[in-house]
Image (cartoon, rainbow over all chains, first blue to last red; front, side):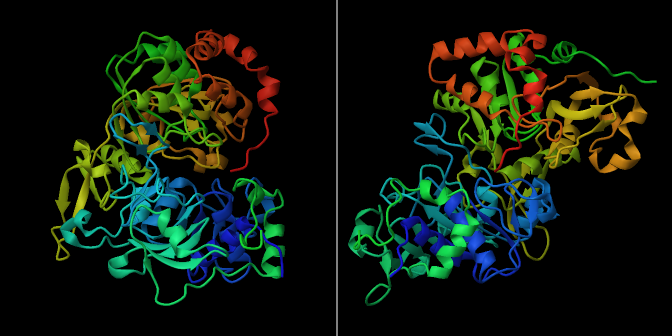
Length: 263
Length: 292
């Protein structure tokens, strides 16, 4: 059996977000989702368009902290073009909110009162527009009830499956929430009325542990929950090549092993 | 021939209390920082400042120039949160919070002299609980869809940093991403640019550089030469952002004493001394290209 880190397990889980995405702009925020994009592009979806993190599309995907060889640049995506692309729906993203609620509504703006926040965060960035124009998935490195909150998030930056907030009660045209990858599990929006559902548990994690760290009731599939697939030896080798600076080792505290039972 | 050359202090003299200013660039890229520092030193007050925010926001907040921010983010990129902006927000400084795309939609409305533009951005979020974004508009066509009405973001002045300009206000923005400087300029009554170099028109070599000319000269009110005028943000390809300086700047938010020391050394100092204080032209010229 191959040894792998939890970070590597999560990269492989993130990559699934782009398996069936087709030829679109792919964006993963933070080292692990970004390596997920790059793994997807380098294995099962080579049609993906990826950028250097600034404004150039590159043929070979660029790892976290790395810069592209100029000869590898294949296209241009200044922010103006990025908005044109995403408003057309031809983008699939994975982003990292600070808070998420049971509707999939996400917050990166402020903790507490928006007028005088307890903690001012970066700001809504492109979250509101992304959420109503193209598919979005999520990565949260610390699955706990401060991140997965009871009620609604403090400031809703991303629309979710909450009809009370939709205009005329109709789902916004591009609203399409995919998966949620955390340090405990992979979740999706496949429960009743798009409720958040545990899709697979990481090795050594129980449903109860995930539920206890979530501020709202989680749905689950019938019967035994599958275990999140371990990276294959081929995937691990590929990830190693895609991350020459080893950014994946520094995301999770103490870089824990992927199988907690074996640890 | 028209001559729009002026000094940075001349630009500051054209601004007044209570104005709504747009600042070009994005985060730590191509901010007119020399001009921002001059505003920070001036007697100007009660400004509404709209930008894709970086250290421009933080400096103006920390020097008490701002009545309100219009923003979608404030970041130092490699340092995710702009610390002085964060402190101002947590002290209750008023804001209008936008989405990045919604921001340019508002600029576009102002640029076209439209009162608003319809959009889906904001639906389902708390952005539209802010009074400025609370209006909606229904499609008059068969679809009948209800939209957010993004109001025009009209600016009294736009402050932009460019690479080259001539005395008439013809400019080149040579960076890989021009961001939304064109729309910011068109949304403003007056546009003031700081330029790395002011050169004779023929030296713009415009026929080979057309794609870098993002705003025609009739839109430009004044041009001030400001070598390294974007520092500590980057003005690629001329020079890159100064991450070490940005770290020092961010650390200055840790205490009133740290801020006072930063301010004395880098803000309340004549611009000609600033360059030496941050390490000189050779240092800035040797800064490494960042990765994102």
